[in-house]
Amino acid sequence: AFFKSAYLPLAGKTIIVTSGPTVEPIDPVRYIANRSSGKQGHAIAAALARLGATVRLVSGPVSIPDPEGVSLIHVETAQQMKSAVESLLPADAAVMVAAVADWRVESEWAQKLKKSPGGAPPTLRMVENPDILAGVGHHAKRPRLVVGFAAETQDLLANAKRKLERKGADWIVANDVSHTSGVMGGDRNTVRIVSKRGVEDWPDMSKEEVASRLAEKIAEALSPPSA
Ligand code: CTP
Ligand code: CA
Image 1 (cartoon, rainbow, N blue to C red):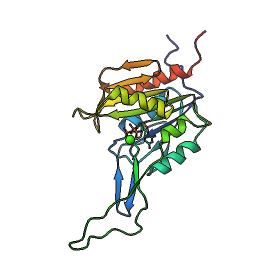
Image 2: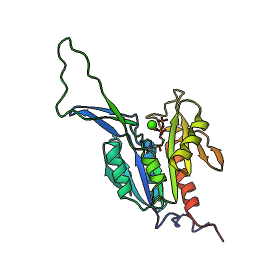
Image 3: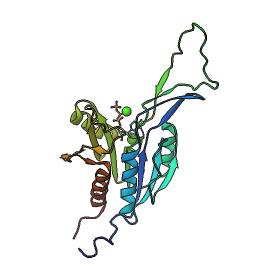
Image 4: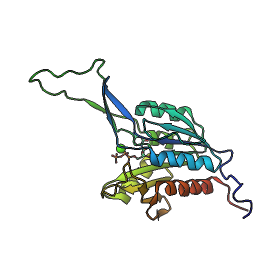
């Protein structure tokens, strides 16, 4: 126990983390984005670094400070996030916390769209973005541990289990965002860890605590079984 605090269980391990929203341009002044403060993803990146991991954080635009001890790649769109993440493979683990925009505008207008008096609003033709988590989960250089997040407003467990399988993830950290408890942008989070082996319910805790506890669980999963 004396050595515990000096021992870094993730030393020598490389972990990719995505955080924040992605931002998809409409024209030079407008965009479509998801709601995400980046608090949970950034806290996870910092917690993994505290346990000794080499952390590569790929983040969309956020207004919180850069986490300590982490190398940070800034991106805007889902396509940029995907290529940044894949360029970082191989890695020991990937934790995809980003709120990736599901759709982007098919072709961005080169000039600012202008209102014309009495004219109709523009119609946006959308196309689906690539699924970054699924890409990593099914990649030839798949990390040993792949973790996704899922914010759900209904059928939490069924949806999380479907995502686990479809995306080739080992764990889905699921949270219920239906109630107005302010998970979005707030400092607290109630999550359930869904894996093939079952469901682990964690009590309501701060996003910092979720991050520390998840980092410890990741360290356990990546360490060889003790002799
Ligand atoms: N994700 C991703 N790339 C996408 C969409 C989602 O990497 N294009 C990741 C998220 O970072 C998260 C997980 O997939 O780790 C689940 O995201 P979520 O939005 O809940 O899943 P979707 O498959 O987009 O399903 P839906 O939004 O329809 O619930
Ligand atoms: Ca989505």
